Length: 202
Image (cartoon, rainbow, N blue to C red; front, side, top):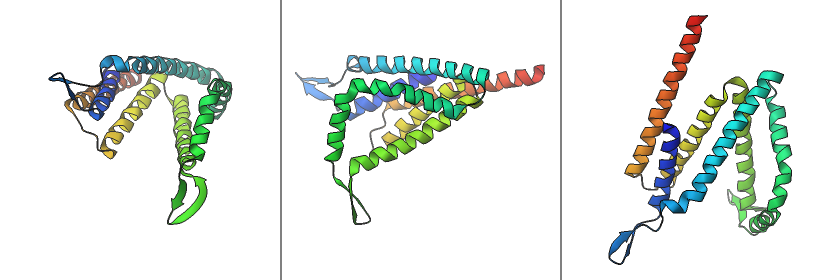
């Protein structure tokens, strides 16, 4: 709970820090409000719950049929492909936009490839590495541990984006970091206590 609340606070703080306060009718007003983020927050919570349920289903599958993480990766992605047909127009617009991007240059050499396609390929490679490791982790530990690792990975990605893009680090960011740290420590201590109790009972 602490970790989830901390990640939400950090995300909101990051968005608010990118939009400075403006003066309106002699009062300081922020251009964004919490209501502005409600649809996104709802979708993220819904996606997190679905992801947690998927992790439980995968854990049950691996316990029943053995460790077949590569097969799991294939079927999850293959069966979801028809869903992209609903976004055909958006995908086509993205393809046109990618094709019209700047040409790729490296070490002064010009390659006949649009730069955005290079970024796309690199992103796919890193996503593949990430997903492969997540599925391997699912086959080795519980779904709760996997959910915790994925949440912390997202949090670290946000921290890196704040540092790399030199966004302001506010008090709200500090509170979010503190909650994530406390939640991680509490989770780790509970996990160690559970493992110790199991060893003691054997």
